[in-house]
Amino acid sequence: MTLTASQQKVQDAYQNIFGRDASFGTLGGADYWTDQIDNNSLSDSELNRILTASAEGQSVTTDAAGNKTSWLGGVNPNVGTGHSSNVGTWADHFKDGGVFG
Image (cartoon, rainbow, N blue to C red):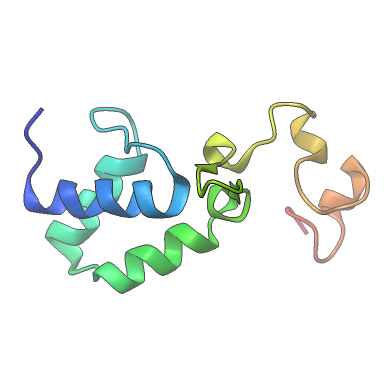
């Protein structure tokens, strides 16, 4: 697939931040960011800031060889979604400061 200039910016950001290819042609994700660049003047630096601060961006680890890995969408596949955030128990999600509070 030949990428547009905006898609290439998104692809480069995904590679640099997440260590993986962007997924075009799916709901959300890379197509959303391409649209933001094309239609809402999203800058390269703002795209990088947002992706780095995302749940997936926060899950990135880099090994000694410089290879990056991340949890797709920031969700740890080894635990239930109720434990994927830094909140104590599932009920804490509903307290002030929790995901839904």
